[in-house]
Length: 104
Image (cartoon, rainbow, N blue to C red):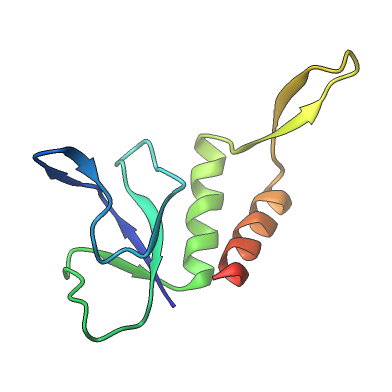
């Protein structure tokens, strides 16, 4: 599996995920609008040289760095039964990314 940091493509129908991303749209970086996706390690695809290829560790490190600026959140059930959101810990972010990588 190849992990990619990429931008959406602009086309006649609007913004879309590039065709060489099999599973994308994860964890937008609001500083530069890049996101994470994955694709098969397949020589039939041409992935532009401007796209950053990342290791699993680099994906995890990227997300922790973004989390330090714009925290990732998770849902929690509050005492009154309503659903709320709280910031994830760094350990929770790392686990979430590791689980995502393992699922691919």
